[in-house]
View 1: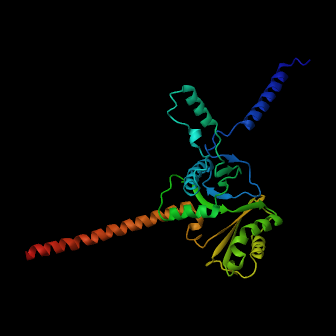
View 2: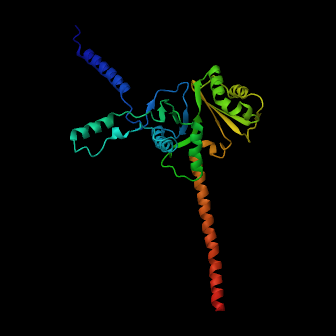
View 3: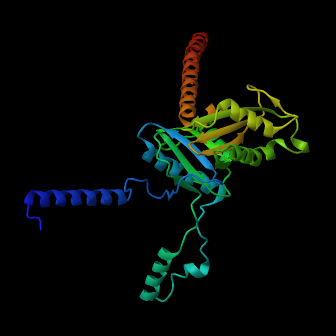
Amino acid sequence: MDTNPKKRKADGDARHEEANKKYKHGKKNWGAPPNMAADRGLQPGDMGVWATCALKKEAPSIADLRDLFQEYTSQLYGDGQTDVTAEEQGSDDDGGDIESAIQKEIDGIRKPAKDPYFRNAQIGTACLIFLKARKPVEPVSFVEKICQDVANGKTIARCNFVKRLTPIEAMDKASDRGLENVARQVIAPHFHGPDRAGKKFAIRVSIRNNKQFTRDGVIQTVAAVVGQGHKVDLSNYDLLILVEIYQNMIGMSVVGPDFEKLKRFNLAELRDASRREENVTTKKKDKSAQASEPATSSKTAEETSEA
């Protein structure tokens, strides 16, 4: 039996340190934004929206996007909550039965809600966020709607650290087969069929934390899936194919010709442009008002002199 007090103390300290590590590893992320359900990492079949943000501002950006996306999903698709029937709601005139009222409140708390339209995927990368979407959300039209509203001067609460939004219609493993699969799935509705001929298109590739793919190789594969009967036009395209490769996942979407006009879906740039335009308009109005004042005064003086 070891009676060395220093050794016993060292063993105790080691056990204490190991326990602390396990405790910290198992702690919940109390700093995560509320009401934005967190999901596992990216998976084949996912769709949603990539978002870039300022460094070390991922958590507030997720919270801001949660509020923004909830506002738009409510407008476009409803609130996404379980419908409550009249029977479930009951009546306020139950004769004052306290037990019934308490039970009704408990049932209301227990009643499950539908899955949220968006879930934050835990990717653990600085300045990068992915919000998974579920049907009936259509990522491209959803992002275009938000950006068009901002371009038209709509004021968005917060989102001060959010930069670019990139919609993703489909996702698969970042492999040659995965690239072809997701390309066929996304491209076919836009380029294939008798009424889809003669499209001008461009391809834009973004690769993050992946050394398997090259930009030129991805473009060749995607262009082959587009097929014959279409023309590459980098500046005056009808459709732009966005390819986003992140680590071991690849996502894709097809957007319209307003992509550049909408600042490549960069919320920060859209807001700045809207503010500049508003300032220019205000200055023009001020100058117009100032220019009209002397003429009005001169005319008034002339009329007074003639009188």
